[in-house]
Image (cartoon, rainbow, N blue to C red; front, side, top):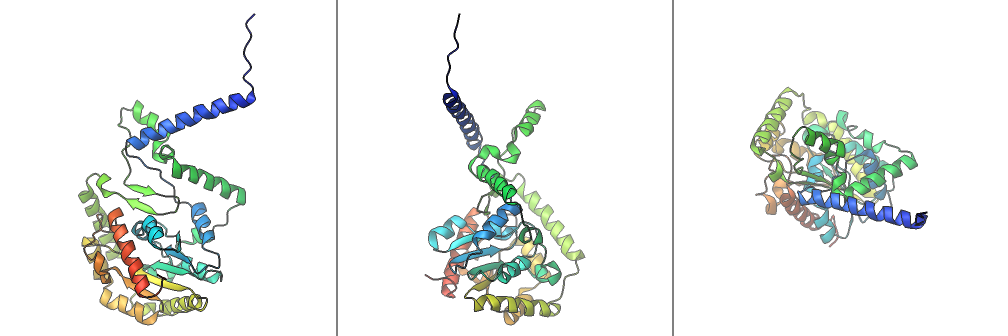
Length: 331
């Protein structure tokens, strides 16, 4: 009679873990070898987690608020390497005003660090200030929040956990004779920073032209507020900034780069000489326009709206230098 060897539960578990680890590592190595990188979905849970790190009564924290331009423009790796401050990236994708998020952060009364808030004239209208409320009003259940963050943390480590590389998606492509997915031009990280590699965008010139024409049509059809009608908004903003300053904090309003036809459209509808001057005159805080930073005047946005990794590194270093020159940041 043949006896079946008893491995014991511990050995079975260890063997299972070892086999699973080898399979997962092999799958991840395969996709990384094809140029894929981990991609972390930008969720309200992830935003809330990083928002919590900024809530402490610590003057050594910089919070970035804005749109996808801000997520792409700040090289958090270079910033941490050259700056002793804690970095919190809270910008949100899409043309959503960050002012409501800034008010939320200041009104909590605990934050006394530096807020770098993106400025774009259409987003200064008070009717837009609540654009990001789905993020700053989000109150998750603790268990659900922990589970969501755990999944996102795993995705930040493994390229194979990218949604675009799911087994169902891959099998469907294989069955239909479609090539495996190409690396995406956007890399989204757990710290909420984003890196763009526009060399991975097929027909970038055509894509850029289509998006630019869409923006041109959107601006032409929009009823933007005049700079004179924004006086109440600027007064409220000024009061907001002064409250933070009284607690030892500071607000930096930053106009991020756009180039080419996109810049011409934005400048046509909201000329800097008219809008920017009024903003600076009627609202406290530090105001920085990208065109005033001499070291990045030749930087271009490949899609006319977002910086790539090289441009982001240059802007980040220029921003650090300017904030130190204005004594917003300590040496």
